[in-house]
Length: 375
Image (cartoon, rainbow, N blue to C red; front, side):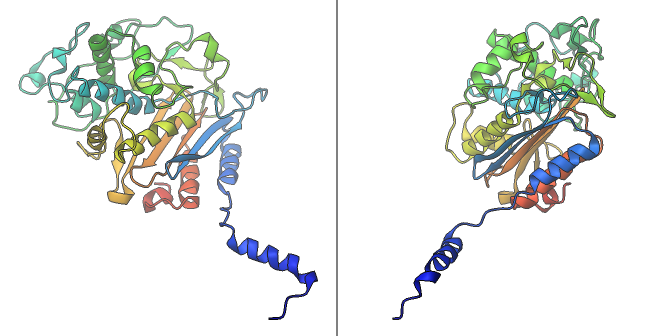
């Protein structure tokens, strides 16, 4: 066999090496992120992408505030808003598996510091943890605006009863429990009090030891107000139009409903832990069977602490979050080991997060068409 001329060997080797190498995915996500931030005046953004059950891309974009002095990094803290509910739900379900709580008994059997007031709607049907976690307990108060950092702070019982200095209505049952799906941050506040009562521990302390630390969410905390030691590593919140939140952010004593400070990568670790527990690779916090309950529709495609879409390989669990000046979105596929978390220091009323999520779905070949279309 005739050997190729020596002068052509380097070219031949290069061609063969190129053919043998795995294809490198062109990264269009960065382009979409930067364009959406520029177009809509988003100051800072934190991103984490999950692929094959692992963190594939973790990146911060922009700055922590308009001064432009401090860049957002993977460790910059953002407020998670209502994604706090998904993480808190796992803490409550851990207590269920310990026998300290029950999914289907009257929550007043475990509440000590405060009770759900009985009325005509609770005569035959009671408020349960399952109903709270799936927004079908009949409880009022959709969400919470939080409190300025220098404002008087209510106790949790004052929030539950709507008494000053609380800035929201009393949390009460005004429809028959189980009769209707209706989003209720108030329900998760009842759950927070119940978790405190049965553990005898402050909510942030319990969640840190039981969920955040075991899931590797080392940068996260439910502490409200945020300790000074952590306040220098945060993004500042902005209202639509770039108006800054007074004091940089609001304080949320309604911790289970809206009080988690975290990073995109920590929330991605939370999603990965759910995926891995479902695959029976780990069960340090809750069991595989309990994760199956989390991922089972209870009412209106609402699981236990997360929303659900698709089936089988397309089964996706997700939750969005909004606090004053902060928005976030978490989505993950239960079986394929894929997902993403986006956190921004702005209230996104223009769909920027959806467009970024759609770019991720397309680049990473997510299995659900609606996600890829940004719906």
